[in-house]
Length: 387
Image (cartoon, rainbow, N blue to C red; front, side, top):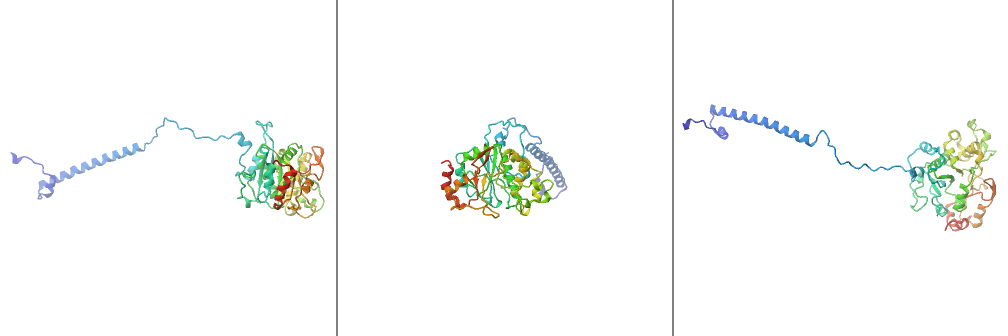
């Protein structure tokens, strides 16, 4: 019968219908069904999320079949080793001297080597007479290298890019007149210059030095010399043997003590010996203080004691001490004349490679910056610089 057939009651009608026991049962069944459906749906969604996460960030990486090109490599060339293009570095003095003291066991060079002269300027600041030196070096690239050691207080000054002095300052430290750190600066210059295997002769100059001859004459004189030029002589009295300290004995004896000008010129073999000295220089560092003036005694004593046979015992830099006092004569613009420069060029005689010679000084000091204008007008003609 139609009226006795079971009918499904809609959920909304169950909430709005009057409360009956049959309605309670239907509600219980409805909520049980909804709870089960919700639990199953939750598990399904979690599984789907995990699979998506797993696929997006897999635990393994696939191998790309297309190989990427290797990063560009900068191989060190022989040229970079034998001719460093940049002279600024981060080495300590100890590291620098160790590196510079390396000597190839094979004496034959595996490359064409043109011997160069290393011009080493030990200055308080910039090379104020640089315009004159520019004229001196002009036209002779490939035959010289320049190294400048100056006080740290002037380290921010840079030379114009067209200048031969541009980028030629080495890592420098403070230097005090008459102190042993002046010799340390000289050794620092030598060590930096020795890093370039083409440098064969090494000359120490100051910002007050000028050349007395043109480059070709100076280059030939130095390269063809079979001797070193470190002034060395025995001097009695307070400014000679009087500066010797007995604490230096027995490494250095009184009769071995020598004096001389600090402005030297030497070949590569002697330069290597100077920077490698671990016997005599430490003695000077420890005991040559106060009025000792290590720059006037270390090299003259060391070279005379160990390498005297190949030393001329004279300097190539003219300095006038005739007026007495702790400093030599200074030359201003009023002193610069043709006659004066000619006199400096040929005022004495000496021995060169075993023969008598009248070219004894290649450089002179002490010229002030005020003399520069007259030097530029007169010196190139007298010294026959390249036009």
